[in-house]
Picture (cartoon, rainbow, N blue to C red):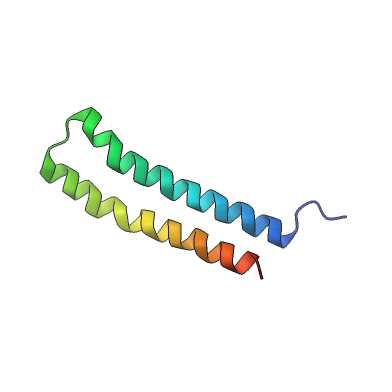
Length: 69
């Protein structure tokens, strides 16, 4: 008996990826207000961190689609 099937592993990795991207976006949008970041620094942080957050989300969606087949 297998404890971890490929579909279960795919679903877990997809959930982890989507949760990681939502946390990444949450920290990116909320935490600069706590530390008094200037607008230019905020835009710099946004431009650096937004693409990996979006890619992580898309990876989670891709894994979800592949694991349901």
